[in-house]
Image (cartoon, rainbow, N blue to C red; front, side):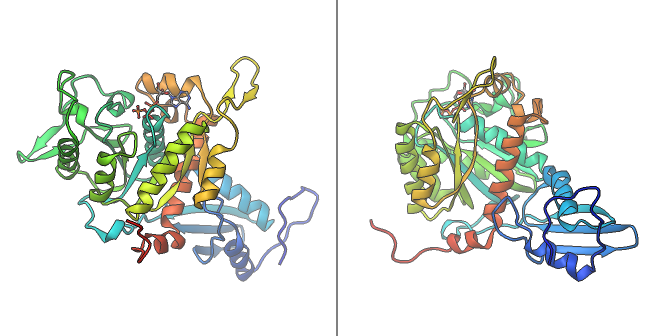
Length: 370
Ligand SMILES: Nc1ncnc2c1ncn2[C@@H]1O[C@H](COP(=O)(O)OP(=O)(O)OP(=O)(O)O)[C@@H](O)[C@H]1O
């Protein structure tokens, strides 16, 4: 089997048998999870074209063009290569197999060990990136003490969800994403000095009384930290997987460690870390500077055997666009930063859908130490 990665125009192109195409494609590595694609291809050929359908359990629409080009190079066939991606997101196991939520296939909790690391910004851009990959997506802003999803998604102050049948909230939609937030139900004067049980009770009520419509992924922007509220939510919300947002700063890493341990305790797979504000790129000269230290998230990920889904630079555009209600993934979708969020979204979907994760999602026996 030839596995050429480069073609040059002078090299005579080959004409592969369908079985050869099949074995090339099966051994191709899925860059979103590091494993070979295997038998997920439908192949049709004629005199001029190789028509491929890739069947995936996660959305990857934004990767289509680059993957098609990669396959063209790999096969080095004289015919044209046309790629379609068919995505079927399945419902994955929840912690302890607790009952899932109507209208939602998979809930992803986005957490951080401490406040201010960019968890909400990451959630909103990740959700929008997932939608651009072709998934149906929602966001629940559970960051009760600083709900910011409404503002970042461009909703006007005072936005309220409609109520259906006097009991279900219809989530407002922005950029194709369904959003619910405590901020839609309260006023600025509502006291936020609620105690834990009130907070978790109110959030569970919003979660279950929202008429989520046919979502592949619902991102829950968790309250920052790893206290009682977070632990209770992690036990009650039927979560398929979690993402931890951290900065490379030591203290944030210590806190992120607590986040991983909290999810381990309640048997929620940590699908990966997002390292935020990992380098500063000078807007004048383009110089990269790791102001919060280098590779912190990577070493944490190694220690706990979780992957780093991606790293975001400290960037003025990320902050300004979120504040303006038009996060960078939708305001500059072709830019370098949007590309990082797109890659994180695909990796997240691929990690959740991988068979390795299903094994991890099974309840573990005899592991608990408390
Ligand atoms: N990569 C980044 N580059 C520049 N600014 C960023 C970046 N990520 C987040 N920010 C900014 O940092 C501030 C804090 O971000 P954000 O509100 O997302 O953090 P958080 O972890 O959700 O905070 P909290 O938990 O307190 O709600 C915001 O002003 C946001 O715009």
